[in-house]
Amino acid sequence: MRETRLPRSPSDRMKNLNNEAAISAGKGRFAAWMAVAAVIVLADQATKWAIIEWVPLYDRVPINSFINLTHQKNEGAAFSFLANAGGWQRWFFVVLATAVSAVIAVWIWRIRKEGQAVLSIGLAFVLGGAIGNLIDRIRLGHVTDFIQVWFGSWAFPSFNVADAGISVGAAFLIIDALFLSGREKPVAEPLHDSGSGKNAGAGKQGQG
Image 1 (tube, rainbow, N blue to C red):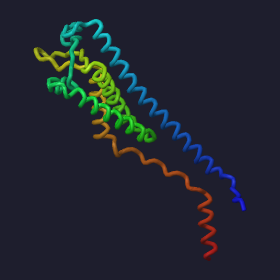
Image 2: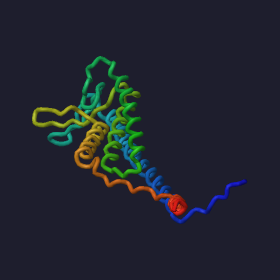
Image 3: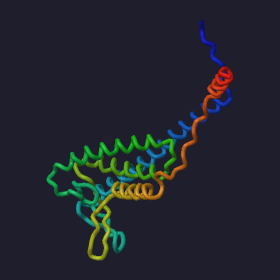
């Protein structure tokens, strides 16, 4: 005997529509944050290409009294960390950046429905910076740095757009951790199936 399926109630249809809207909005937010990361990667690679093409290695082009454009090869991490480690750091950073990028992408996907804008944009900036420098390490064996900032007679370690993206992203993550995480409004509970309430009521009447 075939089971007869009862027509869905208006509340069931509304719940399905709300679920579909939430899924669609979450995918849209994820795509937006991935687009932010992609813009950082493109900006990073475009500026590095221009520096490699037009600025001789180790040359300097003054922009103002405290900022120069330069052309530096950095075999270390951001701001020349471990630059003189002997060569092993290239593939270490390739593996590390690949793993970190994968973790961040999954993290952004998992929080896509929660609307955590500050956390998401921070992760997107870090992701874009990590991928930008990862491309350099795989393609060139080093990272191209070109922004040089002077404070009096002291020069801040040269950096690039990817490094700046990572730093800005880290600032967003710190702001989120200090002031926002754990303070979001709780997600509303989904509507319960109206049929279950009717069945429960019928059961109570039968017991009476």
